[in-house]
Amino acid sequence: MRSSRFFAVKLLTFLILAYTAVYLLSDYVERVRPVVPSNEDEMIILDGAKLKGFCLGLDGLFADYYWMQSLQYLGKKIMAYEKDINIDDLTVLNPKLLYPLLNNATEFDPQFKEVYFFGAVVLPAVNPEEAIRLLEKGIRHDPQDWRFFHYLGFIYWKIGDYEKAASVYEEGSRLKGAPEFMKTMVARLRSEGGSRSTAREIYRELMENTKSEEIKKAAMLRLLELDSLDERDAIRQALRRFQQQQGRCARTWREILPILAQEKGINIRVDNEGNLYDPTGAPYLLDEVLCDVKLDAEKTKLPLR
Image (cartoon, rainbow, N blue to C red; front, side):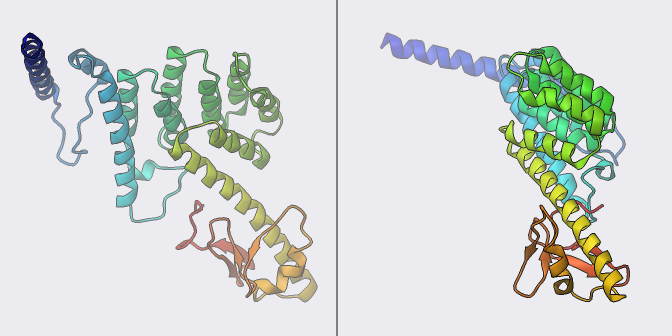
């Protein structure tokens, strides 16, 4: 009997505290809500650092909330955009709340590494400075995790600062548990920073060293894009050779298949009718006027650029 009464008292106390917390948080949200023009995003992002004191032990819940909001926010922006999207430049989406959402998630949980790493992959296409700021914040909270240096180096590599990228990889390579890959990247970035082989190595490591499905998908798409770039180079070379031999451009892919078969390291997908397909299963298109190969914009999943 006494234990039941004690449990009831504890439950009532918890409910009172929870109600008070919700009231205080709601009141604070209303007081700090800024006035914005009607054409601004409807969702207002509060400063996570200022909200922390009102969460009463619910920091993890708020971190998850902002993390999920960031994914939904970007997803809605992409779905609402009716034109082709260059994944290297997402500024056309105007995702101005993406960084605040990700940053707030890390305010409530500074060890939420998936948020940092996702930001490192996506934010460079929006605002590289914000991407760098987010990763540097992660390093401040966990300076011994080599993965932060891997992702920060990735950002500098993406914006073409190969020397800075090499320096970051070099710093991370000295940390306990850092793989040999970190040391290898230092020399490779300084000698061939912009090469496809460097890009392929970086994306392969990103895919293999993450638990995030979003990052894995993004890295895999980049690897498929690199494969397609190699394939299109081989197809163009075959088209040029055929044109030199026959004095005209090929009218079908089947005409250049014997030449393509001589290319080493290239294994392009071909169906029974001689059509060529990109790594995502969409057909390559033959432009007879330009005598060139093109992606099928309507069917391919590869970036169009």
